[in-house]
Image (cartoon, rainbow, N blue to C red):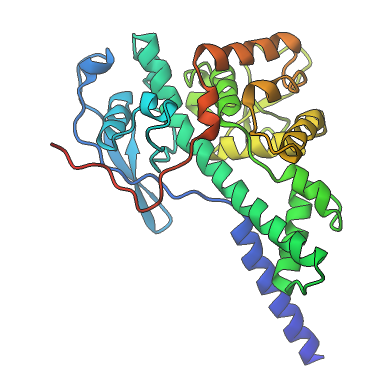
Length: 325
C-alpha cells in the first residue's frame, strides 16, 4: 500500500513538472532605454516613461511610451527594413504591452513600422516555442516507428500535448498537424486588422490583439456596440504574448480552422515554405465578413510587404546590441 502511494505521489509530481514545462512563458524584455526624442516620432514634447514592475520575485522593465520603445529598438540595432531584406534577425525584446500612445504618432508609416517591430518578436517567440514542441514530437514519433523504447516522461508529455491540442492520445499524426507555427506575415496582418494597429480599446485595456471572443464575464471586455441579445465579450490577456499564444492555439485547435491546418500540412508534405498570404485564404470563418476579411488580410500582407517575414528568426539568445558610437 505504501509503495502504491509512493508511486502515485511520484507520478503526480512528474505530471506537475511536465504541465509546468508545457505552459509557455516567455522571458520578459530586459533592455533598458535612455531618454528618447519624442519629436522624432511626431509625438508631443515630454519624456519617455519608463519604470519597473515586479512579477513574483523578478523585476522587468516597462516601456510605456512609443518613444521609449522606439529608442530601445534603436539601441538594439533593430531596423524593420534590414529584417525584411534578410540582413538581420529580430532581437529578443518581448513587450508585455504595446505603448498606450501608439495612436499619437502622426506619421502613419512610422506608426505601422513600430507596431510591426513590437509585435514581430512576440510572434516569433511563440513560434519558436511551438517549433520546440514540434521537434520533440517528431523525435518521439521516429523512435516509435523504428521500435525504440520511449521513456515514461515522453509518454506523459505526449498525453499532455494530446489533451492540450484536442486529439486522441494515440493519434500522433493528428497531433503533428496541429503542433505547428503561424506564418508571421499572417499573424501580423491579423493583429493589425483586429486591434486597429494596436490602438483599439481592447488592445489598450486588455492586450487583445486578435479579437477573440469569450463568454466569461471575468475574462473579457464588453463591446460597447454589442448587438442586442448578444452576450459575448472580447477576451482580455495579462500580456500581449498571452494574446499571441491564444491566437496560435485557436488556429491550431478550433474546428473552424481545419482548412487552415490541412493546407499548412499539405505545404509541409510538399516541402514548401509556409506562406501567410496563401494560408489567409482558409480563414473565411475568422470574421463575419468572410471573403472580404480574407481579401483585407491579403491586402495588408501585400501592401506592407510582410511576406519576407515568414522566413525570419529571432537572434540567438547570446546576441547583444552593438555598442553606441
